[in-house]
Structure formats: structure tokens, C-alpha cells
Length: 119
Image: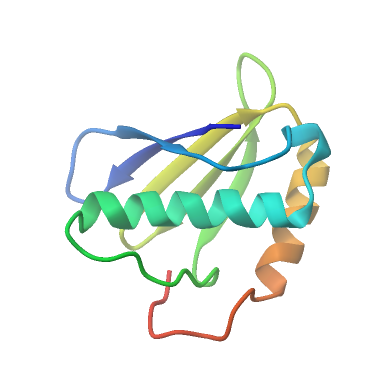
């Protein structure tokens, strides 16, 4: 599945739409690993827009502000904000409370040892 993410970098007055590839399941059947892939993909896309010539860096899911909001035409979106800017992914056909619970679990359990890169 391809996930669309709209990104606004601080200092810009426009948004850019990027795609996150590789999420294997549809949102209604997501597991925590799928949610982790979406969140990391959102941060990775933001970093790539700001620093297009840099190599890919380790993503640390800490220090970000997030919310799951209903989307006007149905489903929900994930919105995150960091010092670099903001990103909104979706809409996703999944129950809001279930997605919020998965995000909380993912953020509570780091996937890798801490790195020097904080997002």
C-alpha cells in the first residue's frame, strides 16, 4: 500500500505531497509494526525534503507531537509536528481509538538503540 503524506517545512508557505511505500496491510488490519513504518516514513520524508542530498538517517520516535483526527470525507489522518515542520498522512480506514492506541504503544517502545538523531 502507498501512503500519501502532505509535508509543510518551517519557513515554507507551501506543502509537498510525498508517498510512503511498503506498508503491507490495509489500515483496518494494521499491527504496531505498520504504524511504526508510517510514522518513520513521515519523518523520513520530511528530512529528505529539507536535506535532499544527505544520506538516510536513523529515525527515533521521540520528541514529536501527534494527533489522530477525523477526515471530512471519512477515515482518519495522522498529523505530526516537530521542529522541522508538520506532516499529515492519510486518510486511513481505521477506527480512531484503535490507531491512537497503536501509536501510543509504538512511541512507548523504541525500535532501535537511541541515536544522535532526534526527531
